[in-house]
Image 1 (cartoon, rainbow, N blue to C red):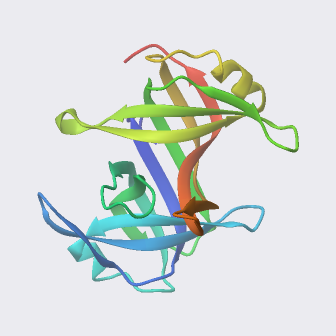
Image 2: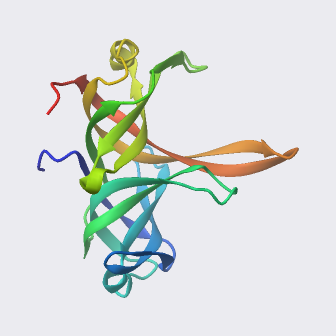
Length: 200
């Protein structure tokens, strides 16, 4: 694994056929959901974006190894989550190995951390990382730090450089929209390690 700002490696199962996502500099891009099982048996369903050439070889039921970057953009359609998080596939290959979900990020804290405890008493700190990419753009990634690391993260300041590893997870929740409960899905990085580092 190199020391890039943004690395993700997923191994999971395709659950739906690819559909058109958007036009990019290299032509059309497509998206499909990849289901990755955790050790607990819970499944994270993550949206993968790939080129048209890769989309042509992807079918529901395929087991794939996806390597790339976590990407974000703002959804201005007015429906669904405002912050959309996907995985941009740099390499996509058939693979029948065990499920895998690994993310490594290096970025700067762009909002004050929010420390809290769960109803079960677990310590959590929510942090938002700005991760630079080429052409002067950045991805803004919500991350959750747990336990003693959460206590340390609560003392971080905006602008601090952070490197963390963990997994990209999906979480369903209910939001009331115009008086009606609506189920939505949030995506975030659940950190296994998180530490302050020197700015690179």
